[in-house]
Image (cartoon, rainbow, N blue to C red; front, side, top):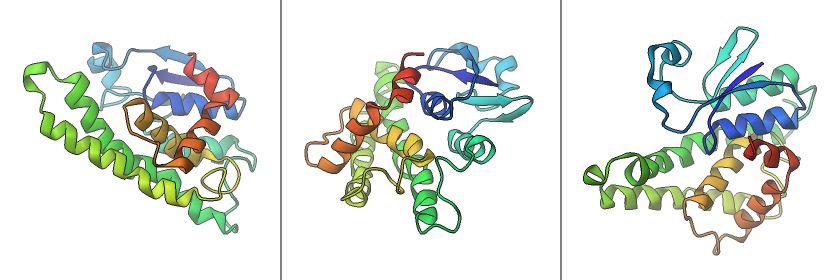
Length: 201
């Protein structure tokens, strides 16, 4: 199993789940925004020129949430996803997709405006709007996490996706002081040994 990886990217969430599942894998390392990911060779692996990409014996998947679903279905052995008959299953699906569907869009726009664009092309207005939307998307997580340790019962793949997005919000300056549930959730996740290993890659 081969993971195309860059630190401080969505690939961390894939490495995190691989470690949670105790699966052996190799990595091909890149830097975020690396020109190597825009080469024809890499675009033949992922036409979008991004990581993560998971290659599992020739089965190649390029979307982090799809990778999470694949890994849990193929290798989870009943762990990290509720059974389809469980009341937590639709909750799990909701939060598995919330990170990409609601949080990461504005976060990506914010990162582009503040880090990737040259200074003369940046827009403070666009960055501010993206940051506000990013922070606002955490309000639903705050409400949902009242009385919960994880998003859908026990720890699941949804926590590696939406939980990772929450952590990235904090990294980019979202104020969690008025969101004690999210703040505690992020602390809980960052103490997991598998995530610590993934962040050290």
